[in-house]
Amino acid sequence: MYGEILFTQLNDFIFCPASIYFHMLYGETDRMLYQSQSQIRGTDAHKTIDSGNYSTRKNILTGLSVYCEEFGLIGKIDLYDAEKRLLMERKRTVKVIYDGYVFQVYAQCFALREMGYEVEKIVIHSLTDNKNYAVPLPEKDEKMLEKFKQTIYDIRTFRLDEFEQTNIEKCKNCIYEPACDRGVV
Image (cartoon, rainbow, N blue to C red):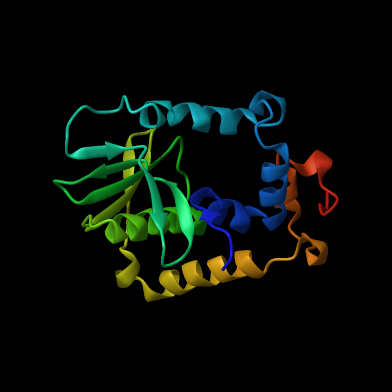
């Protein structure tokens, strides 16, 4: 059996597989030393969720650590409303719904369902403009579900020593670029 994959690594892997290596390498180092301003603002946006101070309503679960046995995934949910059967992933600013965002909520959805919670709606919420973006449930989007499964397989079989980045735009926007020997900048 392979080790667990963090929900956030699904998004990171799509951005750049090498970023997972550097994220783990930096570990608990003070993030102010290497994170970009937008990443710091994104982390700040999750503080009320992570601290458990978002809501006192009993039907609202926030920052709950969950595990998905089927896919070997582990992480935290942002927000689940049991009355509405709604799963919400909050992002500071959403301009595009990237596959990695969808894969993160799929991981959360599968984990919650394994725990006995019903998930009937998924949204990605943009905090800066207060917009919700509906995400089809995994069983309603077979193509995206297959991409999700393929990404998990790709993470499990990835070899850093064989990786070569070809997308210069990703390198230009990567906080790890100065330390990376795989970059094209």
